[in-house]
Length: 282
Image (cartoon, rainbow, N blue to C red; front, side, top):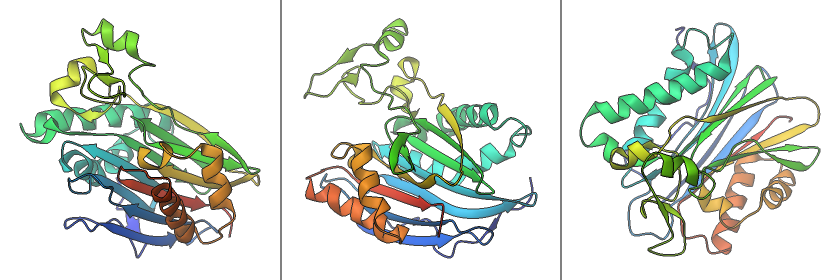
């Protein structure tokens, strides 16, 4: 694989996790700008959301790489995804000719690596929503779990990912010998433990979970204004169209991401809140 040349001066926050962080960057070949904001939730565990937001040049083409990884039972799996998932996708021989199958294959090989890496890494887990923007023309979105991507086209919110919730995939879980229960609490969970039906890691539940992503592609034309990627800390308290309506009025994508996170907090979201806003036009 060609070396990845990174243009963004502000990248991901790694290592010591602060309670909140934000930043921004832009393409050097198109008007695309992005901003991100991550805010720790009220739970008494460390921040478990990680992100990627950067532009790289590979084989003469510019790629925007954007992702939200929402961890559970620790931050080791989302930290691993932040480091490895995109490079695994771009390593696939067929990425340029068949991005769809390359993304699916890389998600699954990355999950296998997490599960076999060492006994501790796969114990926790993570959702993932990834977006790859090729030359500001083609957008590929993939996801596992309930972190979500929403595209604004002509001011209308279009969901680009699939929320993998236990009730919607109950039949698959039960066919694999698992069960879905609302106890304890009022949220449907796989084997009463996990509130998503697909995830990276989660070794103890893996026989009942899937890790293959749903993948969607769209063309970025003159109608496409922006893309929002966020963890469920945002989407639990905000509808897709509400998020688009807030972000579209704010030209600076970093300020838009901060405003979305602030609004989620105002609506008493208790979870970690991570948000990336990518604006396709200046």
